[in-house]
Length: 107
Ligand SMILES: [Zn+2]
Image 1 (cartoon, rainbow, N blue to C red):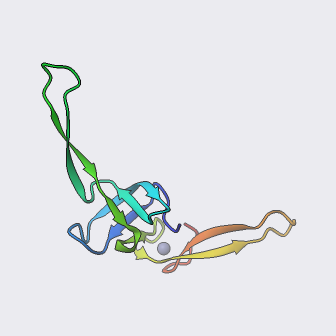
Image 2 (image 1 turned 180 degrees about the vertical axis):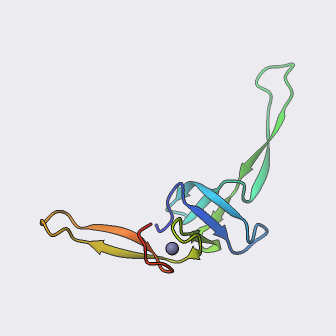
């Protein structure tokens, strides 16, 4: 998955197009995510005890990762994500890091 929890993303299609939000949850199998404040659904919650009122709670709905772009925390632009393999000279473990296709920095 190119998107991680905590990433800031730009929505590029659907009713929340051009809005930004933070990833709250990633569902890798479905290739969908929950984004803070995006695709809000109102869900009614039943009262737990008698005498209490039911509530309408706003919850983000899932959206497909194809409907969003990552916003690079370094250059603040909406970008595609690339990868870079870093191999330490001391013979340590190789690590794969995400890079911004716009500015080339690690993200
Ligand atoms: Zn960047």
